[in-house]
Image (tube, rainbow, N blue to C red; front, top):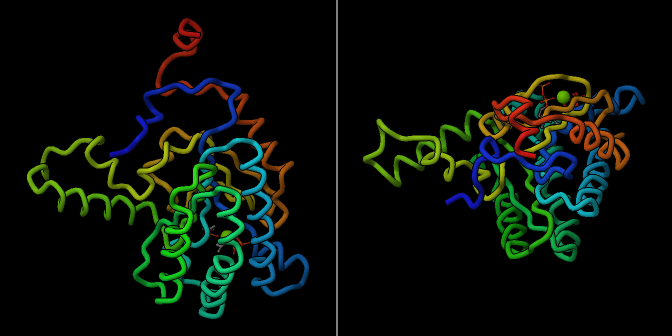
Length: 251
Ligand code: IPE
Ligand code: IPE
Ligand code: MG
């Protein structure tokens, strides 16, 4: 069962650091193009931005960081780019896993693994297993992930577990089968690279996330840019359907 009640029911303190940040790391290709480099150079630099972001989140006391690395639609890209991204994923796991572990970070990978090759699946399983008992930041990488896929796979699993509930099931029965059931819902959603869309990321889980869009391209994203996003988040009033007056009365 999920350990957390839905963030759409509980109102977190305003001014707090978000407990869960979800990021669409976009703009690698444009970063490279601006420098007359191949797109893959942007992906390589994107890994540095990822490292800085993980470190900054650890230092700021963020509990959960979920990063969109490869969408279920990204298979539509040129084959060389897809192959490069898969190889980069293996390489980064190999290089980073002991560092993540030494920093008490728990790694999770969400998404459909059935299209990954055996070596990648094996690396993912090993990385998750080595870090499973760590109590610091939970870092989730969404790879071959799609929000619609998540809803369908959760429904399949729920029906397999409770065949009788098909016609009457409720939110609370489905939620434990979503791929992020170990985490509270994201408080802050960030998309870099200037596009203002969700691109099939965490469709269910983002229901009440505060949305933050920046033109900064992912390879240029750094601690300062993260702090700006958090500052913007801290100025929002999260009402979850209530009125402002109700929130002030309960304060
Ligand atoms: C995001 O950057 C990384 C992945 C989707 C893997 P892009 O590769 O989408 O970069 P742009 O949007 O083309 O600049
Ligand atoms: C979303 O970025 C997916 C990731 C960052 C992994 P895209 O660049 O693929 O999104 P669209 O195609 O512009 O919506
Ligand atoms: Mg893009």
